[in-house]
Length: 266
Image (cartoon, rainbow, N blue to C red; front, side, top):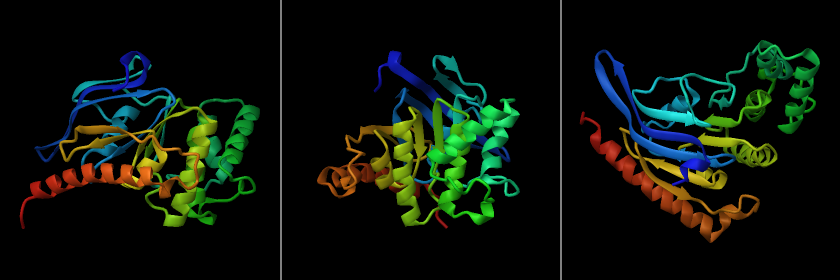
């Protein structure tokens, strides 16, 4: 566990309950997690364990029933410019070009035109979309749409990047390319990343630490350091990588079996 004094993000005894038609669903219970500045942390676990819910709580999009989330020592009560989010589905404006999608939020912020144009182009270049500035989402591949979404979020210059299964809708080849690109961006821009994924191999490849969640109500079952050399293009074939994937997959599988056992029989 990270020393509290060095933690950028602190989650303390977090619980979350959803009420639908007077039925309570305990999504999260007694979550404790601390994340350092500049760290890349993945959250993994069985389906329905509350991974995305936890991310939205950090983002300030959902209220907390119990506990406290603090960023830089300040309690999170709402979304803020220090936290940018990238969704699985690209959420781009279909009637706006790549450049216009990225500029939109900067215009809403009231940024001077010359500065927002400069910043938008810088992030278009950063994510490898130079030459596609005037293309519309319908003209882009899935990977290019997600690059646009990432550039739009990075243009705000948030300290924290929240990513909710951002590559889940992509084909395997595009997904692998985007994973490599994301690591490159992370190395060039000192962001703190919380990355939700159900893909254990993806989590091990990208993250420095992985928080494995239990079956619902979601708790932190374990926090595992990957100790993987992310700069090595052949790392996924190494013995250490395969063993780490197996270790985390076994933890996830235990919780998936528990989740399945809790389902009512037909």
